[in-house]
Amino acid sequence: MFRPLCRSFISTCQHRSFTTSILSNKKKQSLPVATTTAAILATVCLGYYGWQYFENKGPKALNPDRYIPFDLVQKQKISPDSYRLRVSIKQEKNKPYPIPSCLYIKDDTIQVMRPYTPINANPYKDGYIDFIVKRYENGSVSRTISGFEPQADQIHIRGPMAEEYEYRENSLDEIGMIAGGTGISPMYQIICHILENPNDKSTRIWLIYGNKTMNDILLKSELDELQKKYSDRLNIKYVLEHPPDDNWKDVGYVTKEMIKSMMSQDENVRRKVFVCGPDPMLRWISGERAMDYSQGQLSGLLSQLGLSSKEVWKFQ
Image (cartoon, rainbow, N blue to C red):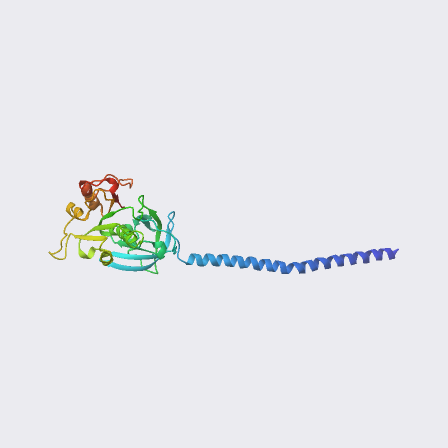
């Protein structure tokens, strides 16, 4: 009676022992696979987050859709109340930069924005933006960013914001420019873009640049160097309200005679005159832009000289 029961018990024990052994072996075999998979996942995660870290640590790319904080890397005082600032951006050597265009810069503490124009012709290629800030006591943005220091502060920038008018090489015979104060920035951007382009060899440029005193003339050494280098294509007239001496030729405000002396008298010339400066100057030269930031009606000296609205462009 007991012998069959013993055989059954022993058989069951042997079967269970065999099953346990198989499961144990399977677990032992799966351990290296699980370990390898975990190692691969860890490597991928570390690689991704490492890439993200270094990507975020490097210079950021400009974005026309949102504000990005960029590191201020250089600051140079160029007049009693003006500074040349440089911020580092991601370098994109083969990407063309829209000319003319501006950047929106905001004071992040009070969320106020102002447009500024880079003075280097292609910030993408350079990997940095140079722009000029004139400090105004009642200027919310200029007062803030002119107090920033390199390696300590960031500037929130959105752009580039291209103008409705885009310059195309060799599309004009003559470009006229009338600027006041920091209104030189878009002019300088265009001048460099044209004169340094080997494919744009015939466009003639003239500039009338008005300021209060000699010390207020921004980028004068750079402009003088360009005029010396491209004397056959660039002509500059500096107009001062308070000249350094009685020998200064162009004194006071810009006049019709000054503009006429710079303009070509050829009726068939392909021409564009750019205007940028304080509102009173715009009213005197060309009329201000409209409330909706469109070009508005042409008036002032340029209208009196017979130019059409198609021949004039007013910057912000």
